[in-house]
Image 1 (cartoon, rainbow, N blue to C red):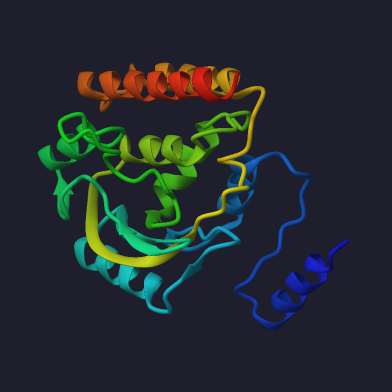
Image 2 (cartoon, helix red, strand yellow):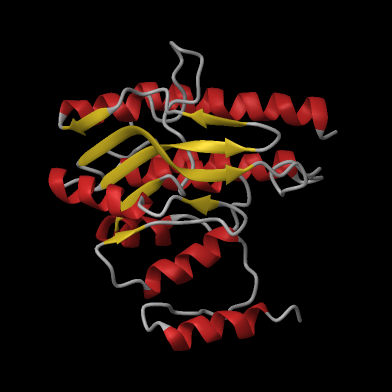
Length: 232
């Protein structure tokens, strides 16, 4: 209706690296599954339609990934609104592997000691090893409609062997007060119940630690309290 389909196909005709997928709206997880299934690259990244990236964003993350043989590279990002500021992960920058990966997972959902977010849940600030993502993504229920990014990052970390966290910021997240994240949702509490059920399905994973379970349940509780206070 708005001509976007025609514009996308124009770009597809100009650059064979671009693939346009037409599908019925099934939510963000369903859309990502379709894109990941078609991808044939070594690494996969995500950019939301109303954000933008620095020209060297993926060049930098790809260089770091290859240099460190990393399954995951995560960077900081710019929050763009009435003013701009950099949002950084609560975990320290560096290379994580072996016992370090256990420590990263222990701070992935929430950093209880710092009362902070832990590792950023955003997919858009990261570069993912495609082989792991293609294994992880089909297992995530498509009916999850909230905290999708956090769930995907957590699921990936459980299978990840080496990760690199960067302080630098290359991604620009545009703050939109009318976005889906901020909109009133009459099914808010039910949607977080779906998230909680998925978290519980991960508890038996070999890399899901007791600390992660505590974080997961605190994560759900804080959003339930928010929902009771603002959505009802």
